[in-house]
Amino acid sequence: MRPRGLALLAAGVAAAGALAACEPRPQNQAMAVAGGDPDRGAALIGQVGCGACHQIPGVTAAAGEVGPPLTHIAQRTVIAGVLANTPDNLIRWIQTPQAVVPGNAMPDMGLNPQQARDIAAYLGTLQ
Image 1: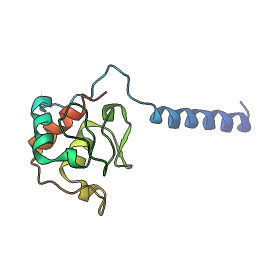
Image 2: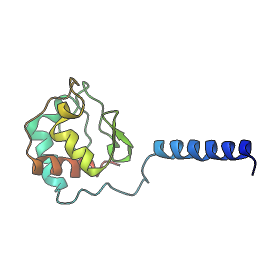
Image 3: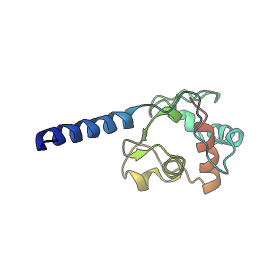
């Protein structure tokens, strides 16, 4: 292949990779969070007041409009605009959002690692 052909091929592969990164997760694949309890997570979301800022399906009174709605969060590829949406990153964001993006609107809620894991496990079910 000539250099121009190789450059075009490389550009096409790079563009396809970039577009694939923007695709949502498969519809029927929940984001598994090892060691997390989704039921406990849903209860914690209600207890710590996440719904004051977020709309969260399945959580009573979670109808806030300060932060983004968390509907379908398990399908998103990016959280906080900077992190790949993986279980570990979601736990990190939930536990210490100010360490991830200093000055953002989400406060550190004082959650321990297990609480953050449980909340992430619940959010991982939101397809």
